[in-house]
Amino acid sequence: MKKLLIFVLAFAAMQLNAQDLTHYKQIVKELSSLKYQGRGYARDGANKAGKYLEKEFIKAGVDEVVCQPFTIDINTFCGRMKLWADGKKLTPGVDYSMREYSPGIHGTFPVYHVDTVNFDPEKMYADLAKPEYANCLVVCEFWFAYRHGKDFSRLQSNECPNAGVINTWTSPIKFYKAYGHRVAEKPIIWMTPEAIEGVETIRANIDNKFLKDYELFNVIAKVEGRKHDSCYVFTAHYDHLGNLGRRVYYAGTNDNASGTATIVTLAAYYAKNRPEYDMYFIAFSGEDANLRGSEFYAKNPIVPLEQIKYLFNIDMIGDNNPVQYCEVSDEGMRGFALFEQINNEKHHFKGLNRGELAANSDHYPFATRHVPCIFLENQEGDAFQYYHTIFDTYENAVFDSYGPVFRLVRDFVERY
Image (cartoon, rainbow, N blue to C red; front, top):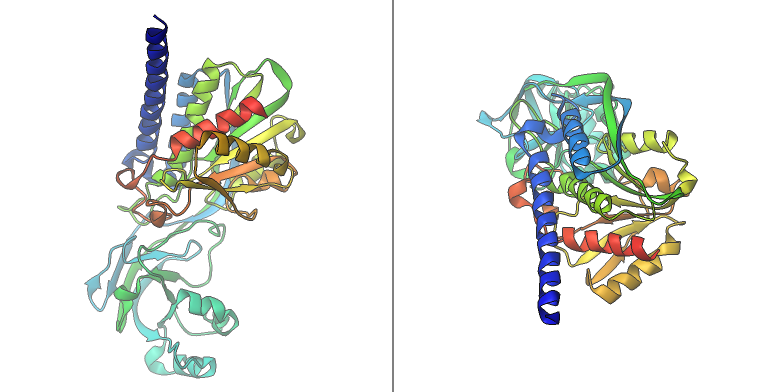
């Protein structure tokens, strides 16, 4: 009888874990779908995803859900997105993307290739003054231009007669939103070296649309504990990059449907296992727009920040690196030894790789306000290469890190 009881309990535990993983995958797949158009700031993608999460938290059994509105200014590309190189049509998201603060660009343009081997900025600007390069697009490798920033700065203004800049970036091509709160004077196109090599003429028909005071919201769920003087906070951002033209969208499965689904399943766990302290689960919008949602919340918290015992920011864990990357605030270091101890005891991961604190996700506005917090992101696995590309899809997702992250966070809360 005793052996049978042990077997039944073990089987029940396995079923619970399987059910959690199934629920987790359902949320990840839903958020990655065409319906939400990459959860961006056009076509209402982010806000549709936020409404879905509000319903998911309610279904999870939380005690309260609040939507916290805020606004941003953001540049978008949801219209025409067509580009030809010497008559060959290029594919957005594969051959090229746009810098997030670029205006649209329309017309046919000569191409000037920067000589990076024998680079001479004076000769470059003298060449650009020649009639054959009037209104041209200047091509240069991104990191070379970055290292010689002062020499290239005039290309971004109307001081120079070029039409814009093409920066080459190795495939898979990236796309960002962090600095999209403005529109620059000239477009910057990111392109793979193969797509632009030897090209003499570019024809472009690309639209941008600047959204002023665009309304977004954070989704805040609460599970009441037995004590209310302190709380734990679990965060993840649910927004992503949205569209690059009318047909291309960035699914953002790893970044960050993976983390968002985690905090929903954590909410479901604590709704069924009543905690000692209040638990808050915050799905932030506006993270890809330079942490705008978490910064707004940190300035307008619904509970005082000093009541937070510990905050867990979960971002991009849809991967399989057996070593878990993390960043920890100064105040959070009081608990990091316990994180390492638990991990060493239970072998959730082979190790924890702690990096320097950076403004790279939603923990940062809290870290700068002296909140004890940790950022968990599974870097350098098989899915990490697709970060901020159109290939960050459900089909390319890996789910190995979900279980270890879930259990590590749960075990820490039990013992902290």
